[in-house]
Image 1 (cartoon, rainbow, N blue to C red):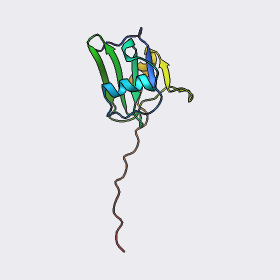
Image 2: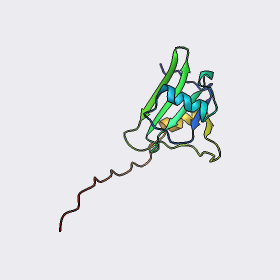
Image 3: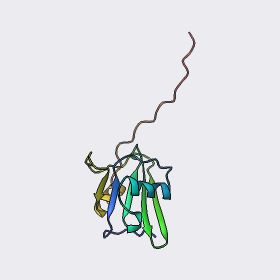
Image 4: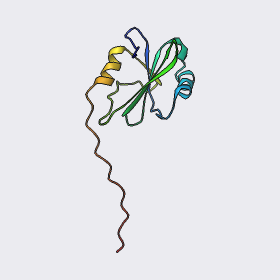
Length: 119
């Protein structure tokens, strides 16, 4: 049921997105921050701060659809973005290279904080 094709327009949001956001909040971001209309049939891509999770929002004939991908290790390698714009138009090949690209080196696990010992 993956109905995204190379003939569609793809827009990558240039700022980190809270992955707790869902259909209506992401739709509001598309309208307010990106200046687009989700009902035009375009595809909108959102990435979290660590580049480990991606949401793709798309309007289909039955309603809104979210595809969510979370990496077990590594991070997505994103294309260069102009700092003056909050949206980058990408093509199908760019999206596929982001999704299928080889993951970057995994970040080492953070050490848990330990209470200092009394002297």
